[in-house]
Amino acid sequence: MALYFLPDYPSRDFLAMAFNVDGEGNIPTIYSSLALLFSSLLLGAIAYAKNLDSCRYQNHWKILSFIFLGLSVDEMAQLHEHLIGLRSVLNATGVLYFTWIVPIGFLVVIFLLSYSKFVFHLPVATKKLFLAACALYIGGAMGMEMPGGYLASTTGAENVSYVIVTTIEESLEMLGIVVFIHALISYIKTYLGGVSWNIYIPGKNTQVTEDQNIGIPALSGPAHTNLSR
Image (cartoon, rainbow, N blue to C red; front, side, top):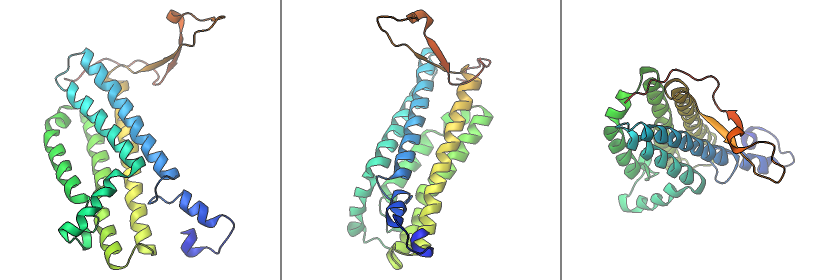
């Protein structure tokens, strides 16, 4: 918006590039990648707890953790952009101008179908948050990518309309991950009794033994343990 509506000022172009949500290797990209990585770590913690409990859905949690790890790497490296080469093969224009949504959309449908039973076994509150996060993230990543592709193929990407669409798209993705992280933390606190992180730094003059290490609770207050299988 600074580029289109404000007069020139020192470092305007640099700041616009640094905070452009549709850019690569900048602040929004790093934030989104770290948010996805944090989701992967939370999913890994849940998978570990489910493995100890021999939960029948333990592998679903593990796979989700790896999926979000992959999404984090993709967000930073923009690997899915390489699929744009399909544009010439499919002769894609309009809403399918960004052709990566075709193969990725197919994988998303398979994922949603294969995880339907897993989602519906979750507690009601967690289920609602998962579905809301999924709707926001997929709605942003794929739903808004189609009008963005249409604008890019017809009017180009250097206009206010395209900037608005991409800003909405990336904002929905970020909001979806925030909702998902909230869902995971709430699930850990309510159904797994919380998680604590311990720091132990050995040294010559160590004042704290390993059995007395410093506990930093990530979630306050142990909750009732009601593991849903």
